[in-house]
Each structure stands twice: as C-alpha cells, then as structure tokens.
Image 1 (cartoon, rainbow, N blue to C red):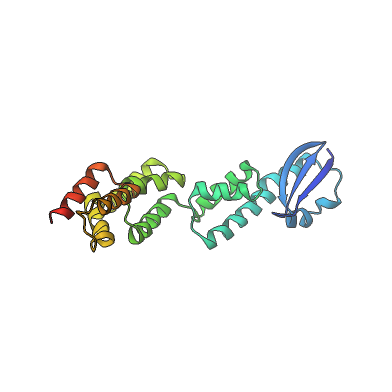
Image 2 (cartoon, rainbow, N blue to C red):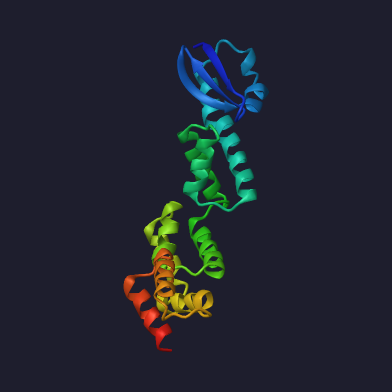
Length: 204
C-alpha cells in the first residue's frame, strides 16, 4: 500500500492521508511528523492498524481532555467538537468512550451541574430545561432523573420572575400585561401558567 497524498489543512493543523488514492484517515500534524509519515511512501496493514487504533485515538483523547479543561461538556457535545476539529467520527467515538470509562465524561454528572447553574442564573420552565438538555444530546432517562432531583414548581418560578421583572409596572396596563405574557412564554411556561400568574399579579 502506498501513501499517495498527504493533504494539509493549516486552519486546524490536521493532515488527510490517502492510501492508493483512497482517503484513509486524518491525523494531527504533530502526530504526522512524530510518526515520520512524511517520510513514508509504503505502509503496511499492521502500521495502518496501529495508527488508526492507537495513535489517532490517543490524539483525539488528549484533544478531548483539553476541550474538557476549558468547559464541561456532554458526551454528544465532545464528540461533535472532536469531529469538528477534524477527527474521523469512528476515532472520535472511540476517544469519547475511553474518556467515559476513565471518568472524564459523565452525562449524569453533566446534567446535574448544568441544571444547578441554569436554575441559579435563569428562571426557566421544566419544559425549557428539558429542551436545552435534549439539545446537548442527553438522553431522556437522564433528563427525567436529573429534573426529579430539583423541586421545580413552574407556577412559583414564573410568578417570582414576573414580579422581579415587572413588579414596579402597572400590570393592569395592557401593554405591560402583553410584555409579561410574551416574556413568560419565551421562558417556556405554558399558557395556563402564564394566565394564572397574570391573574395573581392583578389580584394579589
């Protein structure tokens, strides 16, 4: 087998390797140099397997650790981050599985931390919190379990936030009422909850 093309991408410092004119794998430039691939023309199956199963997965795992140092991420988020960085999806998948095994990645832990921070900093409905976690690739069972750890009463949360933001205004003014309405709906609260909050603010 022959390495027929090494295509460098200066933006993300990755090198796409073609063997016998067919794409084979993408490797970080530093590993491309470290493994002397720039000097190789011939490559055998054993060397190829070594690169795919060890060198690339190790590189992706190390990159993943660096990503996690800057920001906690879900498994889905880190997988996407590694693919966006230029790693092939199968390599990124193996790396994230290894990071899960050694405890760097844990969607249960991530979901709890995420909810704790979001509830502390922003008044959102359970539906909105669930939607956000789904977008981060957290599965439904973990979402359900995590949300059950918090006593979230949508009505109480909505009423507290509406009073905080609009308490100094005249709620009987139609324009103010509509602002409260739009604000709470945008935070994910149901029409039933929003109407109940407005009634309570009008008749405390």
